[in-house]
Length: 451
Image 1 (cartoon, rainbow, N blue to C red):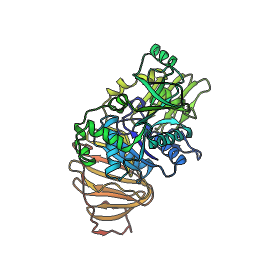
Image 2: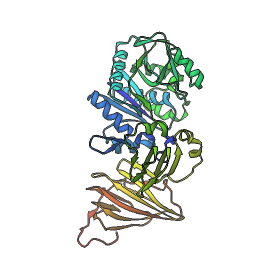
Image 3: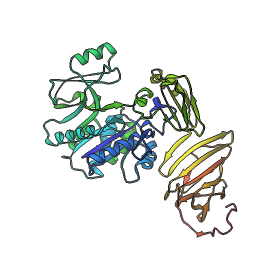
Image 4: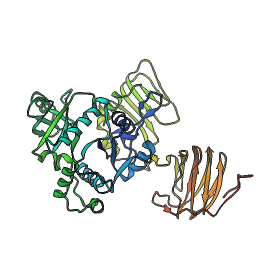
């Protein structure tokens, strides 16, 4: 099965755990059998592989999410990178061109496209396999999944099928309705549009060439910034005549708000939390290193992270986005391909960050023109390279990095360190990458000096 997972938006409705870099699909809230926590993207990836071990998975995503995907899924996962966010039709078109021109997938191969963040069980992925098989048979050009609705929702678009068969033609599509209209749609036998599509690769390439002037993947990539923002539903689905819808009645939730997300949590609190016995329907996620105590609360969600603290009635939490849009601050936490960082202090001319490097990983070899840095290794072992000279480092070592010096660090074990940035202008854009050429290795005997 060739499957494209769409991993797009910034997920501001789950602030303060999500931001422009860390979208909702990367938040680790689902408890695994070994007692650890996994994210939506890890959960979906694992579920696909358990149903089809040979599935060819491609994640279509923006540049800002690539590091988090590599951090959580490994460096070997297939990624089609969008130069910028342009909605689902350009993203799917780019992924299709990438599969055909770069990965050399045959135009006759079926392709299944779905969001990266549904809360589902294995039955959902078996249904995806079935959709792929239908697309391979070619009885229709396009198949989509219609979710059997459990209530009249105002959040989803609707598909009204021609009949009640498992796979049927489509009578019409409906936009997100008000509550009374949604009730009427349900009386007509409408299904939720689950945002899942299946087709042969050549079909999508043909549609892409009809709507976009490009020659191949590389040409489309270069033109991507000039493309019109448009959803796959508007551009393709609602105009297609030879289309069929497949019903799905299994578990399916869109965890797009705090209210729906807490419904999927297996426990009331994650992190350092204490909940009084008089609390009812209260969920807390605490990523800070301080305890959170809740007493006498009902129907509340509390979330604390380096980005901020949310205390909200669950129903009102759905209306968080306008408030978050007004917040303008430094990104306080992000996952990188090599590990993660958390900002712990910001002053006028300095910033202090806690950095965690995964075993076997390293930062890019780089320099800064407007700031100096001081690294203090808290734990772990590795090798620092400063101006092409390598030196072993361990807990307690301090490394001074003047303005302009080239530097990186390799983690032999997991390394935690504090990074103090000092300068007149501290900016994420002040970074120049360099090719690493090591001139020598310094002994670690008596280490503790400043490089």
